[in-house]
Length: 461
View 1 (spheres, one colour):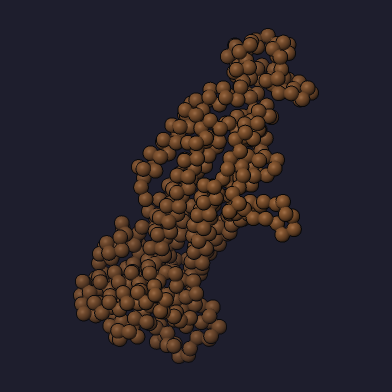
View 2 (view 1 turned 135 degrees about the vertical axis):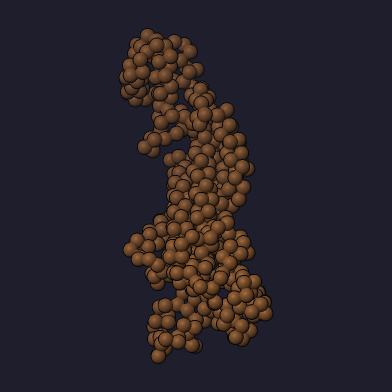
């Protein structure tokens, strides 16, 4: 077919070039944004008397018909029309005649594709926020049920201090709240309307850019035409937020994988979210969590790919920037699928509370509290730290816990130990005494849950 830009050329492009150059195989997913953007542009052109009003009306009606036919599956995209923009314009002109040729007045594919991806990025940010908030809701509901479920907390994957399952889950709530904020900020970066930038230098036509922004629900317009067509920061903002969210999901998945092992047995995966082995009949594998963990690297790659594409480009538009879309689409799809399946999996988890409690009792997780007990008796902390370290070594020799030592044994290490020491270093006391904001006591965690719910309500999507 004849290229819409072919007037300057004396021969057709090679078939290999058409195939290599074409982006319709992936940018067809922008059809709705492209058509809605064109409807807004044509409406403005008619209102500004840049094209005849009757032609603008024909274009709008023709575009609405194309949109309806695409949704019904009645449109076949053409590879030799290169991209979604040229496909839509070619189909429109075939349907309504010469009026369709006026659609591109006052715009370039450069600002057209920027418009489409801005619109798509806004929708992608909203989708991500809805999914993240759904997950946060599931975490908050479960945390409320486990305010008193004691478990070991870890540093270096070594048992450290007793906490509660609710406190552990609330750590992820804080991560996902930050992710929600990042996507809100990414939405703001995308909520800038670039149409009117032209190829790079605007246009001589009296476009009403603010009217197009109003029709397409943008809060502002771009203020530099060169930046308008060459900016991809808003996609990088999305990819960065997606990569960090996937990292949080991956960390959570790693813990669930560990916790579902026989060695931990803190959690039991639901059969609906587990798989078996083709050779070992006893196996129940946490494949969903493992696959999310693996897909995280894929989203990292999408971010790094676009950063690499953009790092050496002179102003303004360069064809390299066509490489912005596949990674963007892949990251969006991967993130949404991962959030969807993770949230569904999480809602079916069974937490083995007795195993968690037993886990907290081992590994001397109350050692810090024993040192704090001595401090309350007037012993300097460094001396208390040394005494408890010696007691831990003693327990290791005897193969017992701190709670199993007699008062006489404790007093041989320091005379300040009294009968009340056993209550002071019980798992329950170790948790409940930590009652400052952000700490794991049930009271503190309950306040944290309330604060998280309030934060969600105060920042609606």
